[in-house]
Structure formats: structure tokens, C-alpha cells
Length: 282
Ligand SMILES: C[S@@+](CC[C@H](N)C(=O)[O-])C[C@H]1O[C@@H](n2cnc3c(N)ncnc32)[C@H](O)[C@@H]1O
Ligand SMILES: O=S(=O)(c1ccc2c(c1)CN[C@@H](CF)C2)N1CCSCC1
Image 1: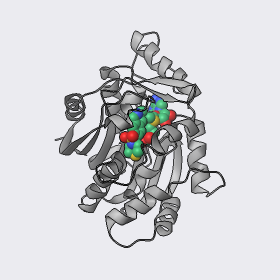
Image 2: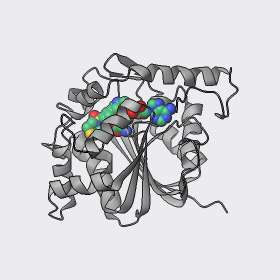
Image 3: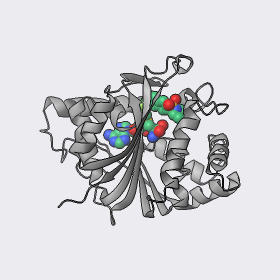
Image 4: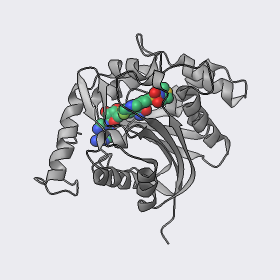
């Protein structure tokens, strides 16, 4: 899936909006997964020493959401997975099948390599160990790692700017959805952010739960040679977009990025976490 085509996007092929979306897709051609992982998922950002650090905060948000027991079913889909799997560690105990998605083949291949336990893949063990610790069930980290590898059964191309983001409608709507640092990082403006949210919502069954994590007031980030534009969003912008797409917000939390984690790889001000639920259409 190229994602560059105007076909079916709902925008006129030559409109300014479609031109901006095409430009975003072109900017991602230089995205370097290894550099992206280095910038965001290794020290100093990968600091597990205090519950106040961003990684423990984010993993706790996800673990606590799944610990409610409200979020379960057969299939969970992750939107814009990139080269990362940390966002699925607490989910894998509550679903039979997990679908990862990304726009870039390089990222989908990184995920395939991890699932197949190939050499030279990123070491997620600090994240897996931390999740096992905060979940408090005494699960061995290698068990959780193997469980996720078994459940991560599909790794699909996706373009959130298409009305059918994964090409054809899913055989079965997802019971739950996760997305981390994707929508704002691939949308040139607020309107396309809201439209992308509307598009991915078509993949989630009515009543399905959605865990959304993203960057607050960020305008760019680096991933090797790529400098990607990000649409700056506030808490209010995110809440408004979710409401417009028919969600009820159950929980909204924000984390202010400490100065020590502002390392030049982006200009993120904070991180938001939302637990929302798609409301049935009456
Ligand atoms: C900032 S990364 C987020 C990666 C990961 N979810 C995380 O938490 O770090 C944004 C991801 O969105 C993907 N992406 C770019 N354009 C997209 C599009 N039109 N639709 C869906 N995903 C897209 C990129 O390939 C990249 O993996
Ligand atoms: O908050 S992070 O430092 C983080 C993680 C990923 C990103 C950003 C920040 C900000 N820029 C985003 C670009 F889209 C990607 N973090 C990294 C460790 S795990 C918890 C999340």
C-alpha cells in the first residue's frame, strides 16, 4: 500500500489537503527505524529507575487500563505500530490475536524479525521485565515475550488517511484498538488528524475500547535522516477529536516531559494517555 494515492481518501486528488498528506507520506520514506528506536527507547528516555520517569508512567497507564478487566476479546489492532512492541505487552494477556500495522515496510519487517526472534533485533527485555513487575503476577519475562510473539499474528500495511485504512475492511471488527504516537505524527493539520481518527474508528466494533497515547504540542521529530512534521495537539484538541468520532472518554492523563528528556530528537512537551470507548450508534 503506497498511501500516496488520492484514490478513495475522501479528498480531491489535487486538493491542498491531499497534497499535504502526500508530502507526509513522502517524508516517511527516509524514516530510519533503528535511529527512531535509539532516540526514544534507549537511555536517557528508557529510564526505569523511578516511577516518575516517562517509561514507567506510560507502561503503568497501559497496565492499569487492562487490569480493570473491561478491555478484552478476540482481536486487538495496533495502529501505526512502527518498530515497537512495548505498547502491546499488557494487552497480550487479554486477547487471542493481535494485529500490528504500519505504513512502512521497513517497520513491518522489524516487527516480523522480532516475532521470529531473529538476530540483531531490538532488546525489549527491560520493558518486558518492567511490565511483569508492575502487573505483579510473578510472570516470567520470557513467558510474556513468547506469549506476545505467539499472539502477534498479523502485521499489515495501513494508511490512516484512507477511509479503509487497511485496504479492505477487516474480516471482523477489532474488539479493541491501541495507537501510540501515530495520528499526530502523520497528520499535517488538525482536520486531517480528526479525519484519520474517524477512519481508524471504522476498524473498531461499537462498544470497543481504544487506548490512545501521543505527543502534546510537538511540531517535529527526527528518525535518522528523516525530519518528520507533527501537528501540535493539546489535551482539548485530543478530547474534541475523540468526541467528534463518537467516543466516551473514561480516563485522560498527561505527563509533562522533564527537561532532561528534551534531547533534541523532537520538541515534545508532554505525553497524553486516553482510555476511550466507541459509543454504539443509536
Ligand atoms: C512516531 S512513529 C510511532 C511508532 C510507535 N507506535 C511508537 O509508539 O513509538 C509513527 C508511525 O506512523 C507510521 N505512519 C506514517 N504514515 C502513516 C500513515 N499514513 N498511516 C499509518 N501509519 C503511518 C510511521 O511509519 C511510524 O511507524
Ligand atoms: O515519551 S517517550 O519518550 C516518546 C516516545 C516516542 C515518541 C516521543 C516520546 C515523542 N516524539 C514522538 C514522535 F512521534 C515519538 N517514551 C519513550 C520511552 S517509552 C514511553 C514513551
